[in-house]
Length: 495
Image (tube, rainbow, N blue to C red; front, side, top):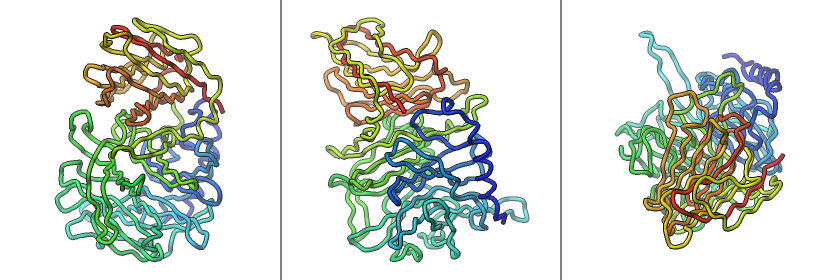
């Protein structure tokens, strides 16, 4: 195995990453140093800084040869790029260092736990693939893989489990049980997804505990990137189900991100599911990961793409793949709420306020425009009559726009990027059923050059999507079928 693969990756990203100008990137959303980015990994707080790793191919803007990229931040918004942390340079991870997590050990070392993928070519030409869980230790900059990797193998799983669909460990320390736990995704004997739980006293020697929950061929064929944590008196299990079938407006065909609320029995080490919902209703969201911040907040960040749209690169782009704005999580009435982290507010610039604006046909408001914007819009009926539809168009010029439309009669919100500059045959529109409030709706837009995240009714739902409209398309308009009243608060976002 080539021991210089990490050095080569670091040299490459140092040489070519510096050639990407700041204006070619989003202002705040994480992008790779160069090349390709997918799942967030190792989101953690270590030595006074937030660390974020990510699935990374520095050599191309397509998925291949998974490394771990690395960034640090003091406030979850402004990120500093560090050299790549890991490369696929061991026999047990020769086909990729796949997704995983991180924490601080009692001795002060930073531990990374990840999936190693090993591939071997058979005599008949076919390739055998095997996934195991591995660890590495480091100081926040350089990491050394454990000499006794792997630490968890498929042989430790229940009988009939897959050896090549077993990945994405999320590790944490449980103070009550005085042990480390880790959950990871698995494919069970019935051919569908599950989340399995392991425990360890030292993070080196592990044992299987239980299967927390499983699809039973109802919610997808594989559950990737699990995360498990208590929040506001509820236990939350996050998964990314692959190959789902559509279920109303809650889930769409293909790969989804979902959360399950329920009850964790720590004595039996079992999880009782109460609810299962979509985590994001947009076009580009997958594989999220959370951390607990030093001040006690549960914060989530996700890959702002999906496997289905991973081949929709614009021409001549030097990087591809973004992370969402980090989101603070809470639970209300059994529902997971998501809001942009409060640190984003430090980067707000000029404020524009428009109150009680009457909208009937198309309307543009003075100074309400931009491609780096934090904007909240409250829409309500004008008088006694209910409007038929209300549309907000962003990233707009005479040719391009992205539309968000609310139909109060059906209480359906639609995100449509059909005219957002994509030249690929990908899904362009998605709908979500939102809570009905007699024609009223509150939408917060976080727009950052190449994306829009729409937070509905204070984070009850989110619709996340990328867009590659030319940057000079920065108009915002409001339009009603019927009559509506709006309040707008808009900030420019600035570095």
